[in-house]
Image 1 (tube, one colour):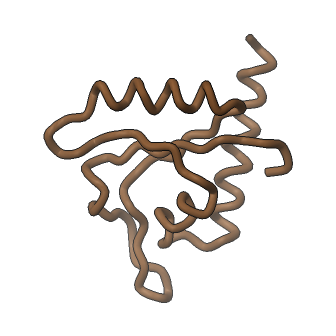
Image 2 (cartoon, one colour):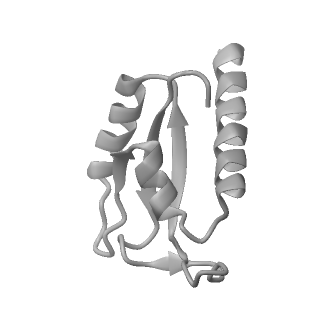
Length: 99
């Protein structure tokens, strides 16, 4: 990610739920979706919107750094994580260009 981006995460079922197969080191990813934003205000608005929809299982949104997001996706290789963020960023850029 060469341009300044802001990341958010939405947990599926609380912060301790994992998903996928363990990697070679036995680590698994936290069950969550990553989101990429081009501005801090856009990301913060998304996070705030999620705070109003928190449910009993702990589904919620948070702002995260790239390092924090990487820890959440511990079951992925570094290359897979980087590729995923790049694809998300490319999709976000396309949406920005269309609006």
